[in-house]
Image (tube, rainbow, N blue to C red):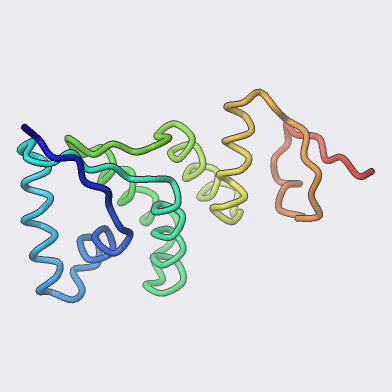
Length: 136
């Protein structure tokens, strides 16, 4: 029987950056167990948001590389991403429109709910051409 495990952001950081080496090695072993079905790894949306932030701001990965790495990792066998379609769409918007990941996530989440109106003062939302900004 496979055991359900929730992921913290740090395991993905260790795996993607190989830092520190000892922890990265442990994470690699853990991911092998996930792939074999010993564990089912659940990833909530906040983990991805934090992962994007740290990879961009601390490790200075460019958006294209960062998005590719996250998508490839999240598609591994026995990894369950809470909202895969929303997250993957948000990564694409984040990369292509040069907006914050959180804004991209909110936009993609709203699209999933068929809502295209926003009340916000954030100018990044002007980059989404198919929404209405409510100003009253």
